[in-house]
Every structure is written in structure tokens, then in C-alpha cells.
Amino acid sequence: DAGVIQSPRHEVTEMGQEVTLRCKPISGHDYLFWYRQTMMRGLELLIYFNNNVPIDDSGMPEDRFSAKMPNASFSTLKIQPSEPRDSAVYFCASSLGPRGTGELFFGEGSRLTVL
Amino acid sequence: AQTVTQSQPEMSVQEAETVTLSCTYDTSENNYYLFWYKQPPSRQMILVIRQEAYKQQNATENRFSVNFQKAAKSFSLKISDSQLGDTAMYFCAFLGSGGYQKVTFGTGTKLQVIP
Image (cartoon, rainbow over all chains, first blue to last red; front, side, top):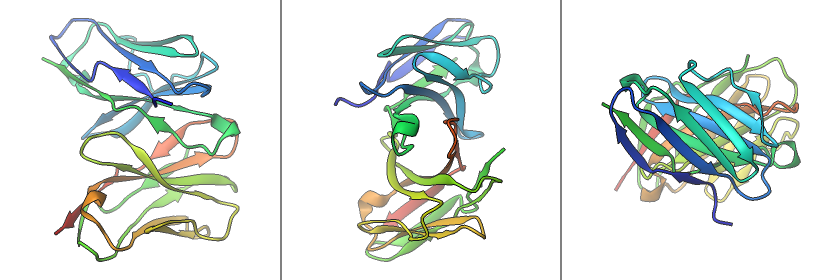
């Protein structure tokens, strides 16, 4: 399998612009997670899906953030409007959940810089 | 809520030597899973080793082993015969045994292997 695929790898944008990050999970994994990593706060879970349904979005910072999973092979994380404090590395991960070992399989991350 | 604490922000070790990374956690659950993840400078996070709380035997994976002390809620990672490729951030992580799949991560320990 190709692993979890994220795009773009790097995104530089200006404050106020819309940002869309994309993720393709490993085929057969029915859990998908979005994490944000910053020096100040480490790894934070933003939201996770089970069978395309959002289960816990309590980590989503505010209404400017939204995530969707229209099908089992694709998810997006959107920030609108973006702000400099959103600058971070955003990771997508997938897993088999209780059917597996609990291991998370991570993508390579999307580094976002908001100027 | 579960918490995971890594009290060593940075550590260094000479190549071929042994190093131990510390992790403590807090939970009221009796059964759960603990993980160590490695994040090399290239950024992608990968699983190093996994421990199930109901197993008394400490997990081992080649040069990597854990010291799991359930009563003390301690889960340290020992790396033997350290190699330059072990240079990375190491994250301790906790997952409860119920259907809820939120993994809680520690703040990480930056390990530098010195030639």
C-alpha cells in the first residue's frame, strides 16, 4: 500500500486566504485523524472520523476550521480565513481502530505558513 | 482525561551506547495501550514499539525495549546500541481500550545520537 498521502507538502499563503489540505488514508482503514503540530503545543488532535462520520471535533480551534470526509478514500481540512497563528504542520493519520493494534499510520504532513 | 508526560525535552547519546527515554501517564482505566513513535527530521511519524497494559511482559523490537511499570504508570523506552539513524523526536502515546480512538501524545523528547 502507498501509505497515507497528504497534499500539499508545503503551503505558503497570506492572511485571510482559504487553505485546503488533503488526505488519502490507507485503503481499508476506517478511522482518519487530523493532527496539528506546533512547537508551543506539540501534537494536537483536531478531529477524527470513523467510517466517514466525524466522531470527535472538540479539538478544532474555531469555526474557521472545518473538515470533511466525503468518502472512505478522501478527507479535507479547510481553514477560512487563515491567520498567522494557524502556521503549523498538519498531519493526517489513519488506522484500523479496534480491529487493529491501535497503531496510527501518519502521512508526511503539510507544512502551512500563513504570512 | 488522560495525560502523558515526557520530562526530558532533549537528550544525547554516543553512538553504540544505550539511552533510556522516560514517560509517565495518568489514567483511571485498567486496560489500555501505550506506544512510542519516532519522528525523524524528515517529519513522518512511525511506530517504534507498542505495549498492551494487560500484558506483564515488556515489549521488545530488536534494539528497542520498554520498561512498563503499570502501578507506577511509567513507560520508558530503552534504545540499545544507538545508531545515527536513531536521531529523532520520540513521542510517548496513550490509547484507551474502549471504542474511543483518541490517542494522547506526550510533548516529545529530542534525541541526538553523537558519532
